[in-house]
Image (tube, rainbow over the protein chains, first blue to last red):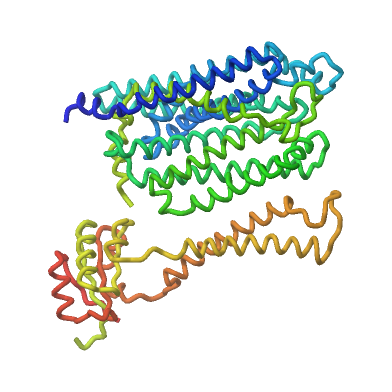
Length: 414
Length: 177
């Protein structure tokens, strides 16, 4: 088989075109509904934008998490990294659409219609007053732009060199590209986690401007990576039945990614518990209020459900070796975790104080809205449409990676 | 055959030959067998028909025992035996019990893993008859060995020896007891 044929054969299946159309259809309709409400119904504007934020954090998190996984697998190497790389690269190339999806939130901040702190500026709120050097509308938007630029630089180089590796004919050059990618990924990982930290604090933590948590950024770095792993497993399980990946994916690849999912499920629980234990031990009113809201009534039930179904259940299920080696079962577990990821994001965003509540949180009945269900579909459809487009631009495996062959053989082993 | 025989040991040059031979002796119905190699060969478990280890369940058991010990110890100390108020919190404060219970879970699970592994491997074992074959020292360097013990119900000195010879073995050794 000559190189040209090989290149053509590794391209994504044409079915993706149909998926793109469906995704755009669903995403377009629901996005128009949500954004239409935000524009034409001022009373519903805040709710619409908060729902949009939920969808944005969930789907944008998969894209940004993909950038993190891309950096991680260049650093660690391994067969799982080679089979997941093109999905992670496609995720990282969705940054432009994630930035576009951020626009409604930026407009919401500029028009004072989403974050409560935009209304507390200039009042006698001492905490918000003290945070003034950081927490202002234009500085919020400039920072967001900066995050996208920094992530964009990382994604740009990782994708550029990977493409060059695909196009080279020379083994030595391909090996050198792999080494360059690995060297670039070391320091980049540090900056990636820092940028994620700032972004998570800006976009989600400031919903409750009086509350703070220092592990918040790491929690999001981990959650987003977990989301992206689950998304990738679900996608790989579908692609494993079709050319070209049916010749490449083996049960052991799924087992390896399953192990990483297990690790991230545990880290998610570990970080969340750390945050809870420190606040619970400190027992200070400015911190405990955040948890007290989330432990009462329906919010408390959701919290228990998260412990059971976002941690205990996937933890026990993913311990099983046979389940991890079965693509279908692992994909089912992954989709289950993905749904719980959305619930987890809702648990962080939903109870936060709304505008005009003077920093008080709302109970479940007063915070829930049908828009929380619709907006993630809207944002998700648009994101998936863009994602599949990016995924189809390159072969589904890095065809000239020096370790490709050993990675394929690894999948077939025991 | 005056010397007491422990079993027969066949020497091979490559791991592929070892796995092929192991497959054949399993198909021939031998049960008391073992393979020796300088590095792990994943296929050999299947070839020799070795069942999956129960070690994972021992580790799980150790972990659960550790968790119960951790919770139980703290409940006993803080609630039953010497209840004093610390930091204004109730005697039974589950969040503050979790870190220690977690540590004991890991500790007991590790103990179960290490000692279970030693136990299941039949260690410590200061004497093993295979070392009576001088060439067996090469099992740590470049040669691959396959053993059939005399205890095997199918073991018959001449027949088994001829059978092992027919498996492309370099040489078949008698292992003295």
